[in-house]
Length: 167
Image 1: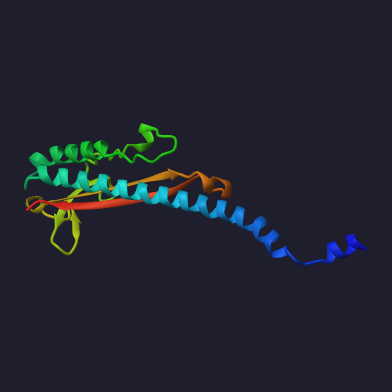
Image 2: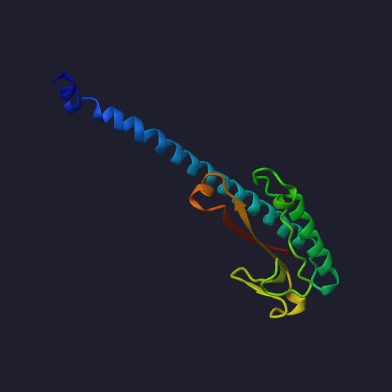
């Protein structure tokens, strides 16, 4: 009779379910928080790298095509100097923000020269050669995840762009 009464006694059930459910939920939310913080840090570092690259390129930019390769090279080297330091484990080749020089100045390239008029960016050759005053740097990569791998997300996409102009 005592065993039957003990099995039907509902006292303490909330404590048991709380203990069984809260610990896994804390681990899940903690893992999600770590991966999202990791992604946020990578996003900040990518934006910092692209800002430095665009500013370096615009600093070398003149109003004729004779200095355009110097502007592109400067933007590329500053992007490489500012890596994304978050891949786990740290791998310098994955962390590098390696912008393509885009010497043909394709509108969808990594480094695009053009004209900034305060309202928008127009890539060269749509902008006249003597009005080129801005550098657009863009990059996209994938950031490796830790906990989200268990849910099938081994990486999450990351992209950014920055425009700087010379006055």
